[in-house]
Structure formats: C-alpha cells, structure tokens
Amino acid sequence: MRNIVAIFIFSLLFSLAVFGQISVKPLDIKEKTLANGLKVVSLQDNTSPTVAIHVWYNVGSKDDPQGRSGFAHMFEHMMFKSTKNMSNEKLDRLTEDVGGFNNASTYDDFTNYYEVVPSNHLGTLLWAESDRMVNLNVDETNFKSERDVVKEEFRQRVLANPYGRLFGQYLEGRSFTTHPYRRPGIGNLDELNAATSKDANEFYKLFYRPDNAVLIVVGDFDQKQLDAWTDKYFGRLPKPNGSIPRVTAVEPVRTKEQRFNEIAPNVPFPAVAITYLAPKSTSDDIPALKIVEKILSGGESSRLYQSLVYKQQVAQQASFNADIRVDPGLLYLLAIASEGKTGAALEKALLDELKLIQDKPVSASELTKAKNQLITQAIQAREDNDGKAIVIERAIAYNRDPKAVNSEIPKLQAVTVADVQRVMKKYFTDTNRVVIHYQQGDQK
Image (cartoon, rainbow, N blue to C red; front, side, top):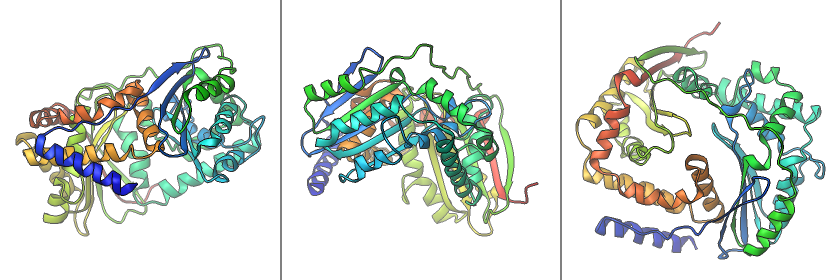
C-alpha cells in the first residue's frame, strides 16, 4: 500500500515540476448539525476496515480560568477517567483491546480526543464519546491524580529540560502582553497547585457540551448507519442553558522593539529567540508564510541551517517557525549557540538572514522546492483515516470550515516569489520585534 502511495506522490510531484500544477481530488465531506448544536462531519472511505473518530472541542489553553494556567491541559487528562457508565481505563479497553488506539491533545485554541479502531467497533466508541461528553466523574480522587501527572510533566518538560523554560514559559510569556496566549499551555506549579476539583467541575460544565463540539468520523462506515448512531447517542444529549464564554482580549499592535534577558540554572549554551506577531489563521498570507518556513528552516539544505550551522558554525541549531493560531500567533526565529559562541553573535546572524530574504527575492527553485515539500506533506497526511480526520479537524479549528482542507494545496500553488518578499516586509519589521536572550544563570 505504501509503495502505491509513494508512486502516486512521485507522479504528482513530477507533474508539478513539469507542468507547474497538480490536481488532488477533493475530500467528499458531509456535514450536519443536531438539534442540540453538535456538528457532525463525516468522510466515508471503505478502502480499509478501520475508522477514525475525533471529538473536537472549542476550548483550549487560551480559555484557562484566570490564575489557573495549564487548566485545559490538565482537564484533558481528566477526560480519560471514569464516567457514570464507564470505569477508569474503560476507553483504553474499548480501543487497545481490539487493536486500536486512543489519545488526546490540548492546543491554544482547541482540545481534541480521538480513537482509531476496526470499523465494527464504531458504534461502541460513539456511545463512549457521548458518555464522557456529559457524564464524566469529576471527583476529588480523579482530579488530584491527574493534577499530579501534569505537575510531573511540567517538572520534566520545563524544569529538567535545559531549554524548557525558554519554550515552555518565556517564548509566549514575553511575546504577548494582553492576550491569554501569554499563559503557556502547560501552566506552572503554583497555579496548578491552586486549582481545585470545583474549578474542574465548572470548567467541564462551561465547555464540554454538544454545542461546543464537532464529531468527525472518517473511514469504513455506512452513512445511514452513522447518522442513526449519532442521532441515538449524541442527539439525546441536552443543550445546556447559558452562553459559552469566549476570549475577547486583543493583543495590541507592537510599536517598538522589546528585549528580555532570561536565565536558567542548567543552560549549557546560550539561545536567542526573535519573535514577531503573526496574522490570524484565516489570513490570505498564511500560505506564503508556510513557504517562508520551509525556505528558512526546511531541513539541512535550508537557509538557516546552511548559513548559521554549516558555514558560519555560530549555531548548533537554527530554525524559523510560523506558529499560526486563531488569533494572531507568533513568527519566530530561534537558535542555540555552538560552543564558545555568544547570544549576540546568534542575534546578528539571524537578523542578517532575515534582511537577506527581505531585500532579495528568493529564487524560483527555492520556491518550487518549498512548495514540493509542503504539498508532499499535505498528501502524505491524508494516507490513512486518522490523517484525513486530523486535516479536517485543523480546517475546522483554523478556518471554521471542514471543507477548507480542499483549498490548502491550490493556495500553496498560487504563492509567488513576490508574495514571499511581500510578507517578509509586512510582518518582520523592527517595531514588531521581541528579542529574548536565554543563558545560564542562578535564579533567586
């Protein structure tokens, strides 16, 4: 199967190189909305006897209660505990014991829960997801056990990792002044310790409800049977009274460069992050910024690697990231110094590369290569049912339209050399810059 897919991808990329365009069959997505507000998105594909079930909730780390950073992530863990009708670990038994898997993740803008199972277990998993949507046991025992798990994650990912504080605290905390994106999704120990099971119950009632969710089903099923199951298991759930709170804070436009010097006790080499506010996820500039990400940071042949790591040898790693979110996110350059090199040298080298791509148009071959990389990734992401469900889910999250997935490749193909230079000049200005230097030091 994978050999067939590889041949297919090669033929598509050959067509792109020769003819300049390729055509990808759009996903035949079906949509409906239940009376309680739950949106159901489905894509039937009977080529393999499996099915992917995703439940997407419109709540993420940006919705953490005030003084409770890390709460949405912690609550994600809670959703795997017992319900009125299922014991602890029952969801694992319903998936893993039949050869499938399940997991979840929390993002700034949403939280997702998903399973992949043999298709004859679809009805059971739909029932299980409907059960934990409204019947979760948010008791003191379950709450404390999962809070301890998240606190240990914080210790390992942030405190023990030499660059954990940079990625897990300072990058967002110093880049945003107003928007709740400034509170890192993993939170911090003080605010996690302050959280209570009462907070968890209130959070559950506010956000975990059918009119704040999308059910996505992709794979081997009969559409009439799926409709009957969704009506049976989800249609009976009541729509709660009251509105769902939404983030209204707006990050102000930056008017001058800001600089920060941060320290941590276990940093072997200096690091520098240079951040710029990004456009919203619905901006027409997103495809060009994705192209820029590949040109600057797409592997060892990319500009940053070739310049900073290979030629100048000032950095052991260097990257550019387009962290696109529903509200304005971040565009950031980041580098970790080679032995004996300084943060000042890193900053100069990063800004020199930035100025180069602003002042001189990228070559046609660079543009084509970046497009090929992104289109290959887009096609490979759709190889299996779970991959299709993921790209549909992202289209819902960032474009509020599951069918936006079908315009991803055409929009990438439409990007020009002029578009690349335009977005570089538009967003990467001196006044839109935050510079963070990070190095060894003793914290009080």
